Image (cartoon, rainbow, N blue to C red; front, side, top):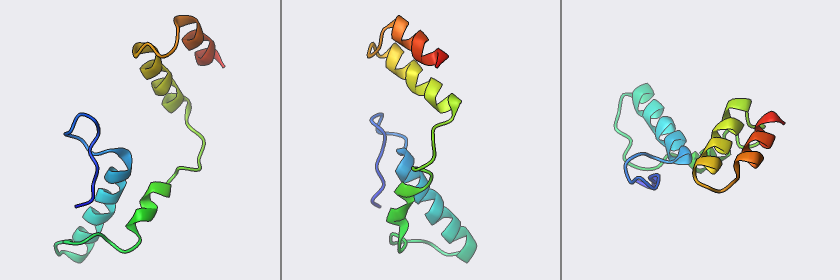
Length: 82
């Protein structure tokens, strides 16, 4: 309910994964079904959104951009070294 899939139509996007995690914990913690969105769960989109990306995350983004033809090999290598 209210969760958004990735473009593959199978997996949840990052925000929806966080919301699902909150609901899952709430259900487990209370040992009851969660049938409605939790109060304040929309704030899950802000979880760690202010932190800087890790080197691994930056590399993954660069790899996606390069493999998708969005950046050249030279740009990929240049950004990878910085």
